[in-house]
Structures are given as structure tokens and as C-alpha cells.
Image 1 (cartoon, rainbow, N blue to C red):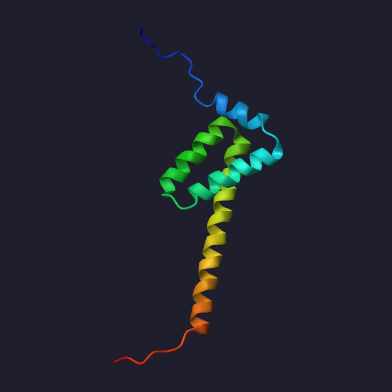
Image 2 (tube, one colour; image 1 turned 30 degrees about the vertical axis):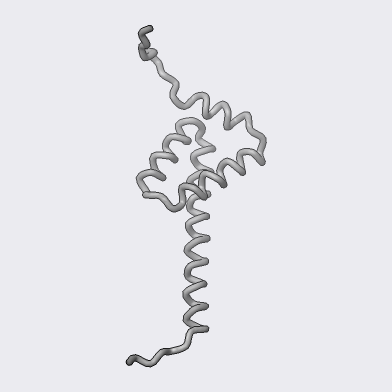
Length: 96
């Protein structure tokens, strides 16, 4: 059996249709899960994923990009707070 590419591929249509069929809470869960997974990966991968989901649905891409930024800011805030807390609670040590 020989397979041939169709002349007008629709690589993102099914993903967009599925996203639009989801209820609000399902979309929120999907975006949150993807953002958590993508917040820590290389920026090039994030960019490509955002482009892909935007191709499927503009709203999907916009929300994913915003959610990734929120997750990253939250992590940065927690790390900064932990460093400050450690500095406040830490005791100086004598060098040998």
C-alpha cells in the first residue's frame, strides 16, 4: 500500500477542534498541565510548542504562553524567598 501526502494538509485542525470542544475547566487543566511541564524546558521548545498550539487555536496559544510565564514567575518568587529565608536563619561560620 502506498501513502501519499494530501495536497492541503491540516496538521493542527483536530487539536484545535478538540480544544474548542473542551469545557472551561478542561481547558484550564490542559493549559496548567502543559505550562507546568514546559516552564522548565529550553526556550526554543517552549516557543515551538506555543506556535503549534496557536496554529491549532489562537486562544489556546495565548493562554499557554501566559500560563508558562506565570509558572516561571511563581518558581522565581519561591526560589528568591527561600534564599532570603536561608540568609536570615543562617549562622556565620568560622573559616579554618
